[in-house]
Image (cartoon, rainbow, N blue to C red; front, side, top):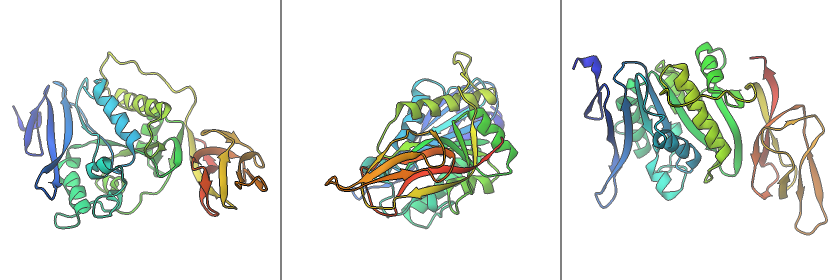
Length: 323
């Protein structure tokens, strides 16, 4: 085989037309047991782009892991051409302990590109960036909302990037949110390296939602179809509604502490002044109705039944884009 026909990754060689599961060694436990993250690689006999699909940067975001699991189990990751690399659980420590951070207390998505001699999280970030990411032509990274905040299925990209805008259209999520790349995030590192990334957000921590999962899996199929990589045995369905591009948005915060109950569903389009939820006390003597501050779409709802004054309870669009 020529050098171009061989993918040399994590110490293994994977040729065209081959499948492999290679180990991404994270660290050792105190008992000296190795912690390995499986990296699932599928290569077509026909050369083409390399797509990297990741999830579980935050260990509590299990819905993203479920999306990648389904992509693998259904064989969607077996490309018609090119290569697909899947890493379903990057933060295996957090996943095992059902926590967001690494054992060192760090948020993996705030330490990229990491360092060989840094914290545990930083070392894992560095290994991902130096040994896996260089092989990718495009990345899809799957996340969910933190804590009890349920995100509508959405793609996050920066403004003025026509390639990402085209790919976001192809993915077909209900919403596309323009948001800046956060410093030391995986997305910002990909941007600096010139590797396009779509960041998917949907659902909430410690929860698997069928609608969110289906949106993520179907969006992945559309992207692979866009790259002419999707196996012909899979059908591609177009979204029932066009993507709503959100240029600006704001969090609506609780004016009072109490028991919280939203009265609108995720993805709802509301008008200024609409009642969208209420906050009460346990004694039946207080009932505050939460009103929409402007026309817009509700694309995140706090599912916690108890809130404190100042807690974020709704994320609502304020300015839409005509894309």
